[in-house]
Image 1 (cartoon, rainbow, N blue to C red):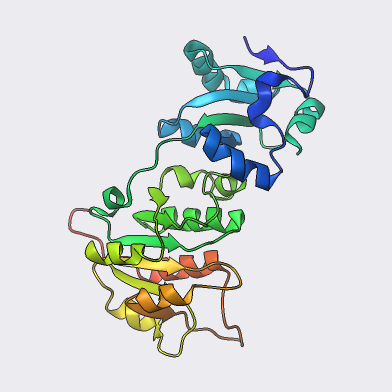
Image 2: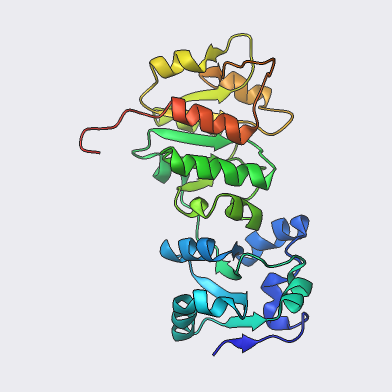
Length: 274
């Protein structure tokens, strides 16, 4: 049977404390080997790819919608906690209106080399610090057939709660890992046969239309952080810089929007039988 929680200071719920404190979650989630999945859809997607739950936390009304998940959890000895909305809000720091939370064990990240084998399209996120943008990039990557996403050491965590939610759980289906050191990792991409293209404004940039007319077989597209954009070292090490033609006096797009436009334009042709 699910366990009723009556107090926000219940020590069994330490995984869920103060989820709105971004600095705290950045610091503790990797060390404690957990991430938080929020909403029925996200939880189901995490479970579908084999991620292991540590516990579940939900308001009582969601026991019906997640009855199969609760039944499996109880069979596996995974705690299921239920409580009133005000208790959960005191505990987590936000109003839980998307159904449920799950504290999930972090999977071990693969090596970049293992993801690059057989890949034709890769997105690299350089120091993108906004969790919403990271989640949006993953959602576009999943929809547009990107084979893998690589994130640099200072990039926001794709498994932070907001990133997962914005991605609609697609962060679980797009293979990803961290690439380091960076930008030295550009040489590794090139050794694997990738043309490395940075998406930026530059005097010597080629138009996205031009690159899309004759795209390379294997392409790694590097997207830069909000505001500052890509580092000079990254721009210098890449094979080329590509820019999206703009109208209306606009000189740039949000990083997630730009990544989606470029990923669609540069998608590889379908292989025979694919």
